[in-house]
Structures are given as C-alpha cells and as structure tokens.
Image (cartoon, rainbow, N blue to C red; front, side):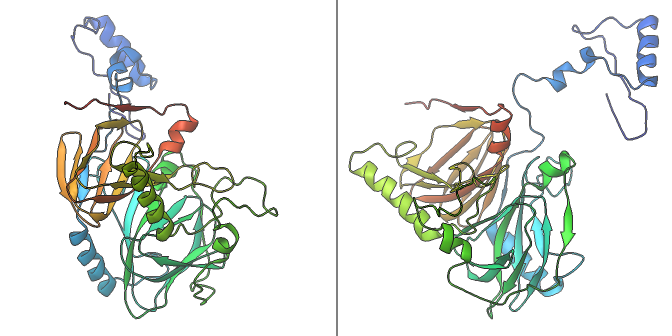
Length: 372
C-alpha cells in the first residue's frame, strides 16, 4: 500500500499463500476500496503488526572529532539570532529519510556559541536539556534564572519555559542539546513563542536559584510540597554524578552488590518532587564501566542516544560495532540489542524515550545470556 496526501490509496494484491486468489471480482472489490480510501487489514497486517518492533531508525555513530570542527566552522560563517534562533546542528539518522531526528522520538544536536554571543530567548512545548562534554563559560537563563554550564553537567529544562543562552567568556563553547521534538511533531502538539532578542540578565552566579532551593540531596523545601511534572532543579552537577558512580563501584569492590551488573555503575537523574524521571517524555542516565568490563546484550522498547563522556570502549548495536572515544554519539533504535565493553574504563551519558512507553504500558526490557 502507498499513501500520499490527497492521492488515492493503492492496494497491492498478490497471489501469496496468505492472500486470497486474485480474481476479477476481487480486483473490482479492491478498486472500490481505493475509491473510498479504505484498506483491508489482510493486505497490511504483516507490516502493521510485526512479531517484534521494527524501527525505521538504524544504529549509527557520529564522531565528536568530526562534529566539533564543523560546529566551529559554523560559528565563523553562521550568525545566531532571530530566524535560525540557535546555531544547532542536528543528528539525522540515516534511516529516517533525511529528517533532523536521531530517532523517531528524540532529537540530538551539537550547539555552538561564540564569545559574547546571545542565543535569543524563546519558549516551546518541547522538553529539552543540555549536556556538556567539555568546556564552560555559557550560562543558560531559564525564566530569568542564570545557570552555569560546565563539563559533565546535565541541565534539564521542561517545555514552555522562557530560556536563552549567553557566553560570558572569551572562548567559544559547544554542548549537546536533547529534545523530544520528533515525538511532539508526530503527535502534532507543538507550540512555540519568541521572547526578547537578548538574554534578560547578565548575572553569572556560581549557583542558580533553582540549585539553592532544590540542590540539597534528600532535603525538600516545605514551601514546595506539590509534585511537578518536570524537575524544578535546572542543574545536576558533575561532582555529584561522579561521586555517586565512584561509590557504587567502591562498594562492589568491598563485596557489596550495589551495581547494575559486575563492573557497571549507573545513576538516573530524577525529579526531586516525585522521584520519577526528570521530564515526562525523557529519561536521562549516566553509566560507568570499570576497566575490563563487558555488559550482557540488552534490548528495550523505545530508543536511546548515548554520548561518550570519557574513556574508550567497544559498542555493538544490532549488527553494527564501533570503537568509541570521548564525545562520540550513537543511537540505539527500539529493540536493537546493545552491548558495551571496555578495557580501560568508559563513561557514558544516555537519554531515552522510556517514560513515554512506560506511561502507555508498552515498555519492555530483555537481557540475553552471554556465552561462558
């Protein structure tokens, strides 16, 4: 079957064993279906209801040492301001027909800001975050709250909040943006609104107001007891992430079972008002593999994007396998098995669309046993 806007539906009838025998009467019936824009299930069920998920996205790797020079060149050639809004370069999965989507639900892009530049203020319904693999000096200002961006920091920002960025230093900076643009585009729910051309505050505090209120582990202000759909904490600092991962592996070395699997420590960024995911459509995690560690193959409904924060390793997604290093990004489509291995140690940031599928009761994870 082929469907295009405004054109008839075409039903392809075959003489396959699972299809009725082609006769003049059947052909006439199919022509009647086409004229009324009807499609019989028996001609499409194999494509619509496969036995396991079949993602249009494919496993793919983007090399940081190729992305960053192109972003630097864009910084020299492409102004930032109204019109383009952001000097952001999206990862386009080769299986998605040229769309600027990393997966069918997730957007990932490298954003680049020159010294003294502003990325103008706007807001949108898409949930977003920034993750910094190297550098510092940019402040993201969310609803007037300036938040410093530094290496290893995870900076979430829920949909429909005013935000802009300002580089207060004499050096450029690049980072990774993640959003649920493809998902909201698919379900036709997006809104967007322009704000001021320049970021409204030039303050550069070490700690944002959100951190001063929410950045105290295990402590919650009594003035904010109602749950919020997305995290009110605008910065999850690397020092705490690093310490949590190191302690997991230290406990394992002391004989305690504290990690996901031997040599594999992992943490999930959470909303302090609920304990759930940081945003309704995005899950964010950090994974650390100790030296000489390999993970069991893992399959999951829904897609993920990983960025190597530090170290080197071997990544296998489906039938694709790559050696990876700092900054490299790769995609894991739905139900494609993922295996990670490292000799010297590997740190990985990961974000996924798992909250969507969990709310729909469609989420599923499967581990495969490895040969001994």
